[in-house]
Amino acid sequence: MTRRRWIADASTDTTASLIGAQATHLARVLRAQPGTHADIVANGRVYHASIASVSVEEVTFTLIEEIAAESALPITLLLSIFKFDRMEWAIEKATELGVASIVPIVARRTEKHLAEAAGKRVERWRRLAHEAAKQSRRADLAAIEEPVKLAARLERSSAAQQILLAEDERQTTLRQRIETALASAEADMPEFELAIGPEGGWTSDEIALFAKHNWQSASLGPRILRAETAAITAVAIASALF
Image 1 (cartoon, rainbow, N blue to C red):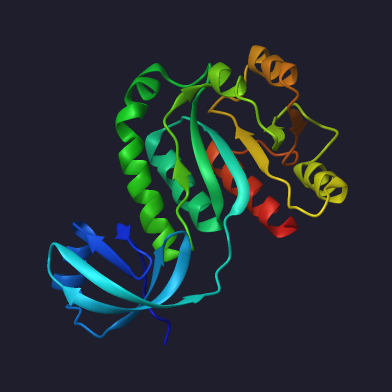
Image 2 (cartoon, rainbow, N blue to C red; image 1 turned 135 degrees about the horizontal axis):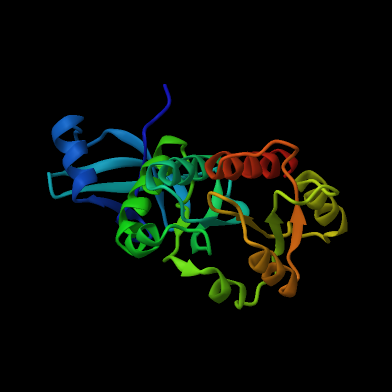
């Protein structure tokens, strides 16, 4: 039987703890007992562990041995802010697929009220990513960054392969961009940044701004996809190629 996997709220070299809501769920709902075995993510690794003590405030595990686990995909997803219910779905699924981090982007066509409310949504997005990581048995958490305006984000230096998903691109697919990057890479797996536009797509000024910062454009095919569909499609394509 597959052991449950938990993500520690605190840890040392030999112990890990669940605190707050996770502890309450484990103690009251699952009625966990000392000696129960589980897998737990701590210190950036996955361990086979045994419960040492249980209370509704804190459940403590003894770390027994490290077990093999896949690392996150080397992908940072720049996700333009769009309708929150759809965006939450995209964050959840991108986390399940294994992205390393997600950056909420305020784009020109991001609705004003969504841009203003995004900062208050970050903790909820992080909780969603936390639950998605547990459900998909990830060995780590996807980092959900604070919302940032597109121009400010593009000013940051990066060694990643930067790919803009653009509806107007007709020549080069995302698959071709990634395959080219992988073929030219040396021993280490290259990192990627993938930019997904908002509802209505990127403006011409934004596309020019991406070009100014040497981003390469790529297509997901001839169909016009919703933002959340484009995000999941892009990550799935990249994952398959890795």
